[in-house]
Length: 378
Ligand SMILES: Cc1cc2nc3c(=O)[nH]c(=O)nc-3n(C[C@H](O)[C@H](O)[C@H](O)COP(=O)(O)OP(=O)(O)OC[C@H]3O[C@@H](n4cnc5c(N)ncnc54)[C@H](O)[C@@H]3O)c2cc1C
Image 1: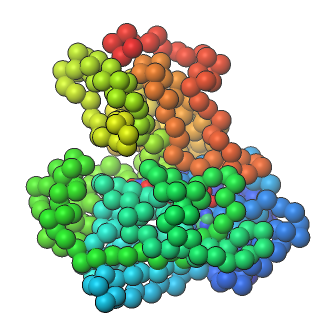
Image 2: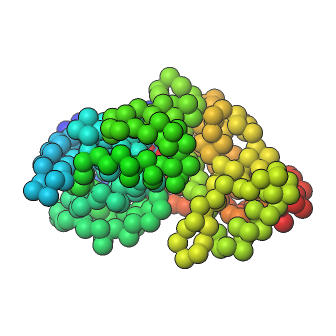
Image 3: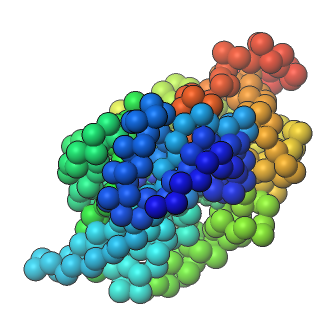
């Protein structure tokens, strides 16, 4: 097991941002994971688990603890008597390797999640989703260990409190390290997949009606690439965490108010989706654009992607503070326009551990909101 002392974290994240960690350990087996946790305990260091770093913003000032990267990479495919196939993948396996192999086997369940960067472990923590599919829908169980004593346990769906881009594991207090995840996949059902994509406004799928999971995957990948939503080391527009904010879910009255204003201003309704308890899910990207941000807008080293208003990218040697300043700018102006507070999707690792991203609508006044509220949207 290699232990790297005072190791820079920037190259371990898709944003390419992050200072120095006291220690960085890659754990390639259960034993190495247990050894790494023992070191943290002996030295009384806080622990942060880092997957592929595609959903974290790491403080440029660094992290005064130990970063453990689960690198276990075993995968097992087990056909079941009921026609389904269970796949059990170690936490360190890139999720897209599983999605690609599932599509090759013409299995359905995660085909729309093709091209999402990140590890299997991180994907579960975040309950990844795209085009109407979420990992929660195929999740059977996960193996995990407790950070304190390395005791292993099985996590079932009822333990995880799955919600939109959220699980019980995505909290600063989470003591569990996911070591493997089991998912249940079924033979690809073209009609079901096409109907789901159509319901989520994915017109290309609705039109081309892919008859195999592999064909659907290709369209998803092509679409994601056109929006710089597949990570590419050589393309700065992908040096993001994907969507920086979650799509806000608001009460019906708020949605009606904003929609009425959209019809007056844009002569068309705003994009929206029904959500739980009669609420409405708004498009964060639309709110950001309507608040006056263009694709490519930049602030210091950070910028919006040239292809997607919801992705903040490291355009030019950005620091975490640059990203936070741009996020605050966006939160402030969206709040002033719509009275809707955007919530970050990204996990923020500060010097002392995971904390809330230090920006919010409450900080708007402190940061001196530069724009007058647009009366159309009030
Ligand atoms: C270009 C781009 C496009 C994206 N598109 C999407 C998308 O369409 N949909 C979507 O949902 N997401 C998307 N994302 C976000 C990201 O890819 C996912 O959230 C991904 O699953 C994160 O996995 P990771 O391994 O990189 O996790 P990390 O970023 O390394 O970690 C994220 C969190 O999970 C925790 N964690 C990681 N591994 C473990 C483990 N084994 N045990 C316990 N905790 C762990 C970390 O401590 C951290 O809190 C995108 C990101 C990028 C860069």
